[in-house]
Image (cartoon, rainbow, N blue to C red; front, side, top):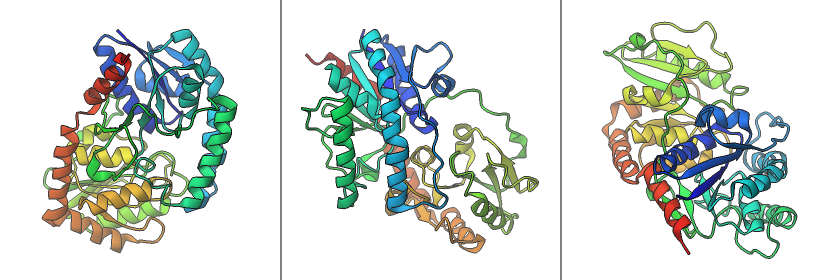
Length: 383
């Protein structure tokens, strides 16, 4: 039996894949623990999980409309660096108390990688977003140099100052929850395992009888972190669907209540929806190109309309579009006419659905949580 310590940020999209891998390891008889903010991780992994608490920085408010370099600067200066500083003491204590054979550090929980190398524990990277693995930032030389200077400063404070590898990528193992067709990478040690799907907490009640078997259904989701800027886009989605009400309905996740009072027999708005349960019944997905939503949709062979906003989303949107499984629209500009045309393309044309099904087969063949657990077991067994 080996011991695995998962170090994750307070972000549900990063915790869910790790939770699936951790559950697989536990089923194989290994001992699993977490270094994380308890209030964010327990919902995903269960109240009986072994959690070593880590602090989280005060959540900074992202400037409205930030894109490109400004969004990356905010991500690093106002979130990733403060998060690494806040999590490092708790992560070091967790390693000392739990004595893991392997630390599994989320790519955005840099405290995991730095504490592991400082304390001489082997570690693996859990790459829950594929953009950096695919060289998205490396294609911007000025930004990449700036990030490397930030990482050097973090390593001098919290890691092994003599280390030379990039702490974003373990030199031993990088788990990427996608397939090579969606990421072109030169990072060594990457293992493409596909989506690691996990039975999530109690799903919200859903009126399954609302779904009309005689109409196609689209799922619309912008995630939980875009509620402040998503109102206009969601409203345009409503109009696009209603212009096709004779053959189309939509389930829209609206955590911010931007569409209050608009639900009817064609549009159903909910603050939260059981996405994994809904996807097998969906004909199309409209989303912001968040990696989890895209790969979960493709896992079920569902084509997409993608409207990337920031961070890694343009990369994910470009790769999915290039693979033929999605149509890309502009989040801040396109109206219901263009959204409707994109929907018609993925619903009526055979090419996007065929591409989505090809990717479905590749994603499922990658092995998911079982394959990830196997790679971690081999890393733990190395002399």
